[in-house]
Length: 438
Image 1 (cartoon, one colour):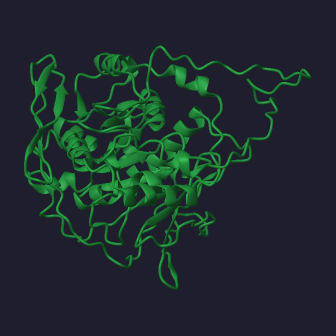
Image 2 (cartoon, helix red, strand yellow):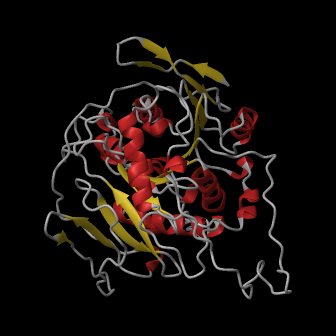
């Protein structure tokens, strides 16, 4: 391992150090990183029509919606399927151009995806296109997964102004840098309703992520289906150049907090055949934590867990609170009052009731050695929810030589929306573009 310098300028122009640990592979080469600032810009006040693509898992057509001032614009792709109206709720209105997609999981359940458009369609000046391989970089996409309690809108699209002048939205920041960034609401979160069972389980989340990844990949790579996957992929041998192009068009996956456990499970199960890179951000992974299984039977002897015939009790509906929406902000001076209150406002609007997590023992399969995807582990230096020995063990045991660990100074659990959020964006983008001369 090597300790690489990674610096940033604060608002007063002084320099602060950011530690980046990069694994040195068998050939002795360490990944190198450079930094850049995200330029401030305004956002469009109205959306353009969105091209519709088919839904994942070849079940239903996908629908993308965007609320305008008086009308909703939709464009459909037939793709041998019947057009379907967006049946999912819109809980927050237009939010100055938030793009909504409706996709369907393999069991037919509707899922909500979000994205943002860059302020300009000309990406020639973006950080992604400063190298000679811009043709492949234009196709780079990434899926963001929220954590245990709050859904994608407050977590990845925080905005205290219509034009996001403070660059608080992760979706917008990545879009401005040329990425096709998407955020998924898992079942029971945000605008994705609970399913008939009412519970959110890790294994079900992994399969929903698979559907979202497939949808994104097909949307941006017409040859995606020919690349194969871990459930029965193609045996076709690719040249080095073809392999590089195939990798660059696969989505990256970023999971935050408990969402990082879901992302890790996904990477273990579906592996490098569907992902270009994995980012585990403020992951709560700890090999010493073993989630217990629930009892198979209740007091009356009825089977309530452990099989298709099990009859679970109704999922609880616990109301979220203002205090709960603010508990991740623990360091004085790292987030302004306006941003914290806006997070709380949006969080309580879209996540009025807590999602009902169940079958948490499914997280016990998390094993870093089974992750065979290039991985960035990123964590705040003062994150109260992580164990540092667990973070080090996670990094050291990852099953891929191409890996890095980034520690963000003076940050806690939600580093991506704190005042130091540009360090987070630069760290993520630097890793994703490490082989492109960024």
